[in-house]
Amino acid sequence: MKRPVWMSILIFGVIPGIFAGIQAAAYVLAWLGQKLFDGGGYLANMLTLMLVVVMVLATLLVLAERKWSALMQDRVGPNVARLPIPGLSKNPLFGLPHVAADVLKMLFKEDLVPSKVSRLMFELGPVLAFAPAFALFAVVPAGPAINWDGIRVPMVVAEPDFGILYLFAIASLAVYGTSLAGWASNNKFALLGGVRASSQMISYEVGLGLSLVGLFLAFGSVQLGALADAQTQYLWKLGDGAFDLGLPAWGIFLQPYGFILFFAAASAETKRAPFDVPEGESEIIGYFVEYSGMKFGLFMISEFVEVVVLSGVITVLFLGGWHLPVGDAWLTAKLTAVHPLLYGTVAATLFWLKVVTLCYVQMAVRWTMPRFRYDQIQALGWKILFPLGLVNLFLTGALVLIDPSLRLLAVVGLLQIGLLAALTAAAGPKKKADTALAHGGHGHDAHPAAPAAAAHH
Amino acid sequence: MTPLAPYLPIAAVLGVAGVLAVAISAIATFLGPKRFDPVKFDTFECGNEPIGSARQRFAVKFYVVALLFIVFDVEAVFLYPWAVNFKALGWFGYMEMVVFAATVVVGLIYVWKKGALELES
Image 1 (cartoon, rainbow over the protein chains, first blue to last red):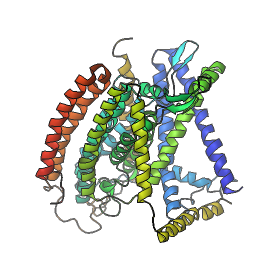
Image 2: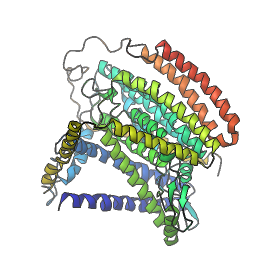
Image 3: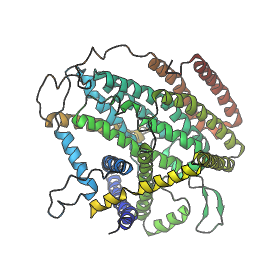
Image 4: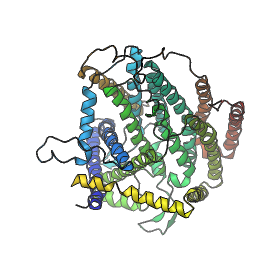
């Protein structure tokens, strides 16, 4: 088959299909759990959403990152591992056997604890890095709560009223993991990585907290489910028919600067490029330099879990969660009339598709942007993100008070998007030589497709 | 439902997260081989013999960053309850928060001018 054909089947058929299947099963499990005892649905969701979906997605992102970096660097990427199954033993299966191979290797590798480390702190490091990252997803709703046979079936692990504060609180615990790992290793490189990581993470936490306050001002809540539902209202809409066309009050239209500030600050929190000086593999290796086997694996997987959680949070806060941009009420009514389970499954699948798209954006950012210098990271955090966050906050507050229908805020937001687009266009290639170069680069980008397709045949 | 019921799933999640993290590192400890070698178990320093210890003094700048973080993050925490009740408080609450934030901004300008934000000096 031609590459575009199977790629479109994969993107528009297989991936949504897998998510729909998982989500249908998750709703059924949550319903059964809720039927057994009150709160059983939450426990079932913890099993399906956190232990299955997020963990598997994070594990697959490790492979996706390797494949994507290979594509960016004109390589084929991981394709050597094979499954010893007749008929499949010659098929690289997109490198999927590498996921299993990686996990097995990490589990059976010697767990090397260097003799000069502080043993207890050394063991605590990966635990304190992984546990908060894993616990983060608890408050992110993956789908609507449906009413099935008189039982309210939630699609979130916990619904506390403090919502996003839980995220901030638990995310800041991850600092202990990295700084403990760096200090306990008794290694100069690890120590450097540890202090860099901790000072970078706490610097960006200020900007991270400020960047979202504008959104809370507009919607008057910090609960993620309520924030997702608040985005279904239309700012302007055409007609009052069953199917509405209009501009939804999505966070990204109301708070484009807030979105960019949050994305930048959260990327710094996950310590991914362009903010990856704590683990700059070409200079200091990082705070986990003395770890081997699965303990290093815990640091690695927690980074990818954070990528998934960040995508989920951005989806809920800025991209309408599980809602469609237009015609959401129409779809909800139609699907709920058939069966609430169908509506829940479709909505949650939509959520996961947005999450996967945002994961892809983070991969693309990582392999597009060069690494910042350490002092640049500090300057960006304190001198740009923090003051800009304050300005955005008070501007948003004034606009919400002047016009509580949020339309004025949306007008300013759309102007901001226009300004950003104009600035980006102005910063792009101007001269003819530059344009030619950009085109050459574009053609080059498409080139790695050839060896990958060849490997498939 | 007791008032504490919404927090039970969170307690469960934190428990599972802790157990999972400990279990994964414990499994790794028990499954792998153990072959002691003084060179292999030495601190990694690019293959050279380690010079001195890593338990040394390091730049005080990192300490300043931690202090600044506490000041400004506490300010951010004060903003959340205000944001949730924002529409009820109206312009009065808005001006109050402007005054509060102004004092913090004065602090930011002060540390900026003092050079506490420059790591290279």
